[in-house]
Length: 307
Image (cartoon, rainbow, N blue to C red; front, side):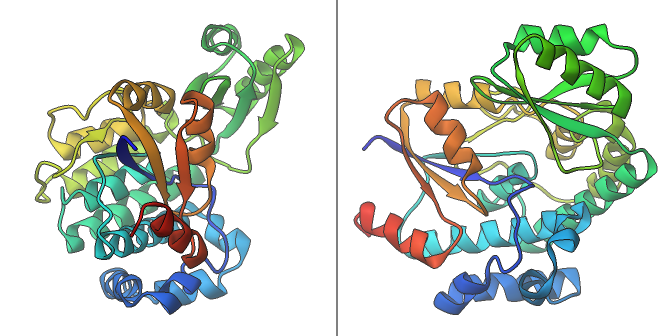
């Protein structure tokens, strides 16, 4: 085994009931949920347990839930002696990664995620957008298709080899997706009403920055890779970085390449779902991947790592 990377999940894989099993099996995870409820002002475990799929899909709800689950999983791993050699997060997962790496204390972390989620929810309600996943098309073809249509469409997630997400104004994105479909790509409309990581999130990024710029941050205590650059985290003030991250493409495919070059071969997905494990398997041949959203998967991983 080479190096272990912790990958913190992004939005979209949330589901009703997530975290309930974890809290039932691990007191340290339950403690994280208690901290979240105290910080956010509502019972986040009850919301995870009782909230419907549509409610949990709302950005103002899903981001705090994903963040809390991620930190709960991280706490269980730490308690069992599993520590990362490095880490990365996908979109909102980058906030989880920064918190796990002690770049912000517990109250600050919950304030950051709550502010981010509410700002993005408000921006989506003020100016709706859409997103499509594009499969089996080159980055150049996707970029050219977006540039060729009337209105605003842009690549916003470079997920892994052969998978890119585009976002922007409804008519422009639909037109770009149709061009790519006509040229042989597979296109999938995503179940969102916002154009995340595009310039349509600019109002949210300004609101977010204004509220977090006075918060206290410090340097992460384990190496992180950046959505914005695809390389190691830039030496930049975190409020400015997080503002930029909200309106910049997520270059996760580049992060995968950076992780590969740095010798990472074991990847633990911290949060709901197994999306990032799938991206890794497409980008790093022979990688060991472990999605860790519940106690069964966690125990399997701990056993495999000899813990």
